[in-house]
Image (cartoon, each protein chain N blue to C red):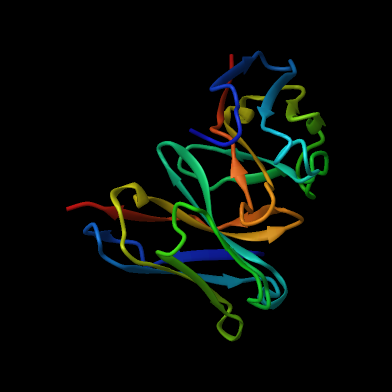
Length: 116
Length: 111
């Protein structure tokens, strides 16, 4: 069974930093692209994408230059380093497995709250 | 404002069919056959229903079907059941760095 478990969410002040992790199990993590998707009251927003070999990375314009996606295939883990956090980054963050231009498995989500 | 436009709500009675639209542009929905649909129940993660416009992952009932015409994609739920009451989101590849753009979501109510 595919499992994705996010961790690292917290309450952080504007301008602060946070690192999210996603532990994957139940599938061959090494061959799948991975994504971060977030959900605020305004809806779902794709955040970032990384290929299995880390050669291709994309970011949404809203986080470009502030967030960094990475992965450790030896540890079956995906990461999102978030710097210069803003109020509008407050959301539930999901890691999601990439499949045929879609997201076929999702974690349970982790809450990030940016507030003073 | 979301990149793709969905109606905020839709409804139908048990057994009926309901169609939810997702309108984009020639740069996303109309330009690629890379539209997917997700179902989300309250407090749960989204679940993939349709990918590449019309394809269903294993385990998704064939009551769920997808289509596309021009810049508008559609999700049809046939034989509505109480458990279909949920939020539904579309998404599309939009080229370049815009890996995915989402619709604002549609709340489906089963009357």
